[in-house]
Length: 186
Image 1 (cartoon, rainbow, N blue to C red):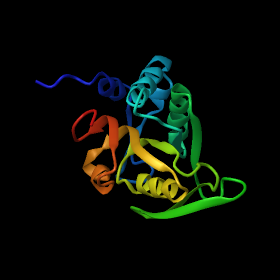
Image 2 (image 1 turned 90 degrees about the horizontal axis):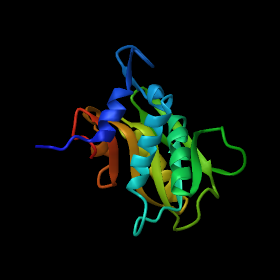
Image 3 (image 1 turned 120 degrees about the vertical axis):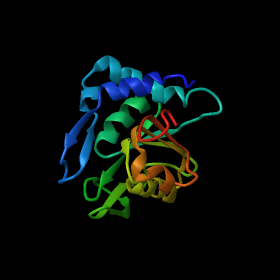
Image 4 (image 1 turned 30 degrees about the vertical axis):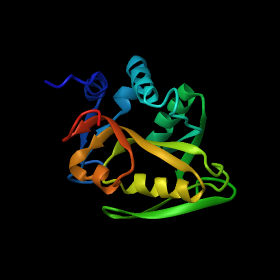
């Protein structure tokens, strides 16, 4: 018998479905109720951090994908005692940037980081709130790698397993606290 994952249960209890957002036929998984519950938010961040504390899991920085990945990533970086790297939509960062474009279900998007956001060999943990098709995660991973980082894994609060993001990420390490349509805590 499987042991219940308390983080998965906590996330599920604070997750809200929003029908037809951002477009008709999509059910958006909204984590704002989780973010609004201080105790639940703290437990989720501690749950993510616990996987990356102690030896040999050295992390030099946490990178978060705009916009909710900023919230998760900044809190996680603080908990781990490391810096935070924002992965932004194109045109939002001042100074020299490096960009990566990728396909969406209904178009393309471009993300960017500062060209000096990471140093060669920095061990970076990539985070976002939801893993869906994997396009954004792959683009962010490749972008950070092109800047010299060693991306050590991808952490997310919610994974929509039925959209195949984990499969698209291939052999990259992926961990989700709550999986919709798959194995919990994978």
